[in-house]
Every structure is written in structure tokens, then in C-alpha cells.
Length: 475
Image 1 (tube, helix red, strand yellow):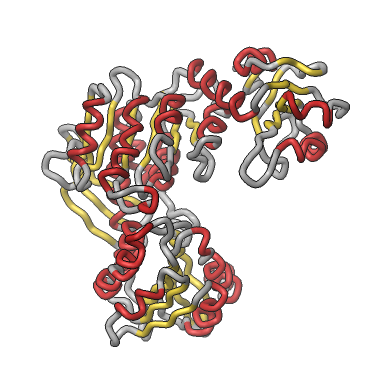
Image 2 (cartoon, one colour):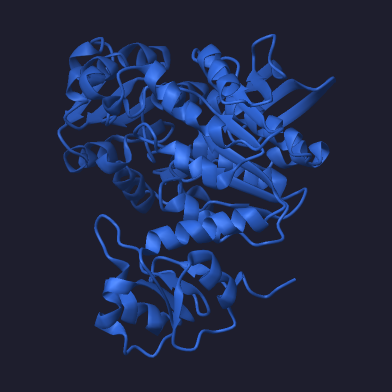
């Protein structure tokens, strides 16, 4: 096995670049951020929306970059730096070419995941379970866009067993070029929901954009679809139009190939019984939530389709942990007792907001405690934003919420939509709302926090954990 992720010769050839200086024999990794760059890696000086990597060339050299990939037009500005370079016309295009070369040399089983909700959760669960059956390479965080996907591809070692790629979008024609780089054996769509609705006319248009993922599936590959999704028929037709040979499904629907038969939801985990092929299998899922169960049906299906050891896959799901910002739960010390914090602060749209409220409803407060929802704006919903925010009133009531704290300009409409028996406090911003949440929580409460990422309700999560230490740390 080669010690190099790439040899320098392979990089020059794949990227159609030219060497500048004496190149090392190879590189151990690829970085586009000097803050996390490790010695021996190649630094790609990508020009982004806010920063230009070329402006950080000296930082890359100081961090131990073994070579840099730079644009021809910027070479003159730092050609005297004592670090070898590969010079290209466009650095992002060069990274894309390297990613395509990585996919071409790989014999791994490749899975691509998209959907309006559940992409990252499903990707991380696949990383977790497939690691029990072989070596796995998966995208970091939510590296799912025009630079994240080629970067993840270019970082893929040549000798892994499974590659898992998250592919996102907020406008049409975004998934198409990305999936044609990834060329998955299995493409999974978790669910179509009103996310990024400001860029689309309706859910049908969102489904059409998500359906672009079918165009990259390799011959003989699989489209893995949620049979319970209201847009299933449309997605099935799109897959067939794209020439996908196998459309398989997961869900509660009686016709689903990976079918949920029984479900028991608990505060910290779920137990399910499902059909996998001709077998009925009992599965414990370590992360709580009805929406997590739906995602894991797809995860189990994808693992089965790529030939993973299913006993090991099922066993690994028992150890699954909810991630920070995506359902992670904390027990925080408060006075002589503690309260439960559910961190759903990573992002929000109407579907994921409802799922988080169902999760909140499933957790029983302790004696004297309340269910508290702390909700911020859901963004990119376009003209339907007001209605979709007001429509949260019914799910909040159904979740047996006792107190509601809401923040952001879009959330204002929800206050007047709530029944008078539920206490509501509104703030125009997270900073305005924060003191009220910090001072009002008490022992026995269950607090769930959720908003779109840029509304920054993660600040409330951090403030609560800082003021009220986790039970484990306090004991």
C-alpha cells in the first residue's frame, strides 16, 4: 500500500498542471484551509466567495505544506516562496480533475446521499455502520457542494472498500455535475421537503432538482427511495427516465423493499423490526427520534445493496450517537437536579422542525418540569415563509409544549398563531432571546433548540452548557 495519497506525478498528469520547483515524491493529504493543514499535505489555493487561498500561501508554507497548487495568474506574486508548486489555470477546476481521477482509480462501492433533510445524518450513520465491514471514506461535515464534493473525492484513498458522499443543492443544475464526478453505485434520497423553497416554485421542482442524482448512477446501480415520500412517484419516474436499472425503496409502505414492521420510540433510542429481503430483523437504533428511524431504514438498505455484513451493520446501529446540532442530548445540572437539552440547532426547515418537535414530545419531563421549545427562523422559504412559520403552531401544540421561546424576524407570525394556554416569549434576535432562556430553565425541564444555521441558535446551546455543567462533569 502506498504511503502517498497521491504521487506528485499523478497530480500533475490528472490536473494538467506544470511543476514549479522540485516537487516531493508525493503528498499525504489535501487541504484548502491553512488552519487545519498538516505537514506533508498539498495546499490548494482555492478562491472562494469570501477568501482567496492565494492570500494564505505563507501560512500554508509555515504549516508544513509539501507543495501548493496555485493559479498561473497569481504565480508572480509569490514565485519566490521556497515551496514547490503545481501551477494550473484554475485551482478549483484542477481539484475537480483530481477528484475525477480519484473516482476513476477506485474500486470501492460508492454511495451518494441527498434529500431535503437527513443527508448528513444518513451519511454519518453509513460511515459508522460500514466501518464494521471494511475501510470507509466519507465527506467531512457537510462538504456537499461544488468544492466540497471534488475535495472529498480527491482525498479518497486508492484502496478503500466504501466511499460515501453527501450531495446538496439550493438551485437546479447543482447536483448534476457533482454526481457525474461521484458516479455512485447507490444513490439515496432521504426525503423531499420544503427546504430552499425560495429558489423553487414548489415541492415538485425541488424533487426534480434532487432527481438529478440519478443521472450519475453507474450502469447496474440502484436508486434508493423513501416509499413514504409524497414525491415518490415523481422520483421513481425520474430514475426510470435517467436509465436507472434498479429502483428500490425503504419505509413503512407495504411495498417498500426495506420495510418497517414495528416501532418503539424511547427518549434515548428506538427499537424497530424490519424486513431486509426475506428476513425479519430486530434493530436497536442508538439515536432517538422518529425521523432518525426513517433515515436508518435507508441506511440499512444502502448497506445491504453494497454487500456489507448485515449482522455487523445492525449491531453497529445500537451504538449510533446523535451528532452535535442534530439531536445530541445533554443532561445539565440545575440546582439540586438537572434538565435535558436537545441540540437541534444545526439547521431547520418545516420538515425537520416538525421532526424535532416529535422528538421533544417523546421525552418526558421530570417532576415539576416542562417541555420548552426554543425556535428560530427557517430561512430560504420565499413567499411561503410566513405561512410555513405560522403552520408550526399545530405541531407545537401536538408536542405538548408548555413554553415557547421564538426569535428572528420570520418567527414573529408564530406568536399570534399560538393558543393562549402556551406561554410564548419573542425576541427579534438570538441575543435578545438568550437571557430569557438562560434564566427560565429549571430542573426537570426538557429544552429543544432549533433554527436555521445563520440565525445562530447554537449560541443558546453553548450558553446553557456553559452555565449549567453536564451531569457527568459535575459528578
